[in-house]
Image (cartoon, rainbow, N blue to C red):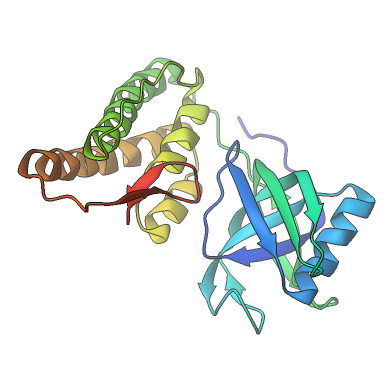
Length: 229
């Protein structure tokens, strides 16, 4: 069964970050073109799209983005004395770019929403989600142990799709691997891929923890999770 798809025009923000639905993304806005974009989004109460850069840089000339990104809604904003801005946004839903539009100083696109396919074998998908829940909780515990912290994970999302997005946010892996997860056509696809990735990451973290081969300092990453310094 196909999900409904909507087509809209939206401002695009190419970043060296993969945003998943449900993920909180704080941003410091300093380039003139993106200050203009965010001011317009705030004035018109419109979201913008976050897309991972395929080629190019965040600063300077317009970068070429990957085709699948996530719509972001601004939750908080602060205008600073030097003219820059701080915002807190949250990912809402995925989209796929149909056409890039170059009519503003910043990039825009004609995009279509990209909902995950709802497959019939719900029991098999739930089994995958259950396994990912176990693995991602262990992953967080291992990172906390390596950092000398005690973190207890009390709540993990219920639906397989939410579990898939949570694991995508939690894992400190290469952006290309995160983009591949975001591109997944169905909950089964993203969960199956995450089982493989989490097994790899948990094995590495277990080895590093037991051999004490871990950096002396650990800091919080942009997604809110811990990562090596």
